[in-house]
Length: 107
Image (tube, rainbow, N blue to C red):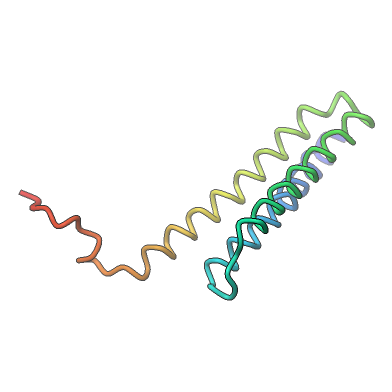
C-alpha cells in the first residue's frame, strides 16, 4: 500500500506542475505571448489540484497524508528544477561569451 501512495503522490505532483510548466514552455518557444493573467490562473489551478488531492487523501486515508504530501511536493519541485535549468540554458544560449562579461577588468 505504501508504494501505491508514493506513486500516486508523485504523479499528482507532476500533474500539478503541468499548467505552469506548459506556459513556461510557450514562453521559451516564443510561440505566443504569455500573459500575467494566464500565469495567475495556472498557479491557482495547480494550487487547487494539489490542495484537493491532499484533502482527498486526508478524507480517505489519514495515516498516509504525510507520505503522500511529501511525494507531491518533491515531484512538483523536481519538475520545476528541470524547468529552471532548461530556462537558464535557453537564456544563455542567445548570449555569446563576450556579452556575458560585465566589461570590468578581470585583473
